[in-house]
Image (cartoon, rainbow, N blue to C red; front, side, top):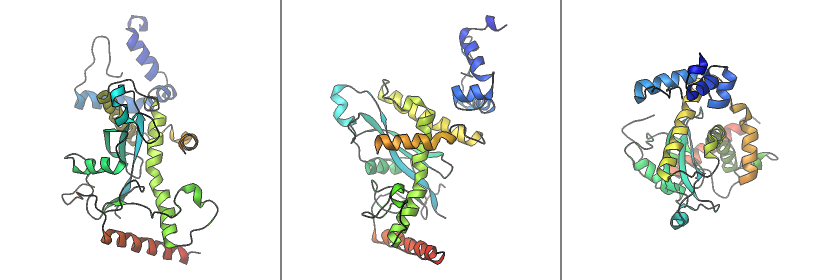
Length: 285
């Protein structure tokens, strides 16, 4: 019977119907999740099978950061798209929750754009990033320390590798140590995204608009897999992947935050939090 099915259908049958392991290897999700996804696409996306192609073809909210996705652009545009590493890319803002799922993604900005500028655009969009007052995301010092966005102390040890040999001596050091460990969730989320979808790991030849759609689609599929599968099949290899990358690169509400201006009040709030955390930690020693 299979020899009468068009080649595309046979290929999809081989990808999906043989085993969960084959399905995970080819589609990055198990068969149950894939068939459920197909149902969602049919129901909400309006996609239909054709004759030759089947459709089976406490306030802390999380963390945010930007990542570069390399692209090929015309020579006239290379200056705008060249990032600080010298590559032509788009600057992608990703915001994730504690379960390594994206809650907001903004892509399309040129690689030369400053991270804070991209974030400012995201919070002013109608369907952009809306942070309820009293809540915050962790971010690095590429962003301002302001209401809704909590950064580490500048000029104080921060990266995880710096905390392997000695204990923090001040409340600023202790805060930075806890901050980097918690903020690591966005770095792992981006790592898992690129590990899952090879198209994001090499320069795209597609037009920029198409590349932006591909990036968002990959993020949506990543979220779907994280939600539907009890065990993410790729997470076990994430640490090794992150290590190789490091070597190579060394709740919605009407009262939301609408600006990125630092303030004495917010800096004082961070100091109070950091001192309380440090005092509680000292009591355990």
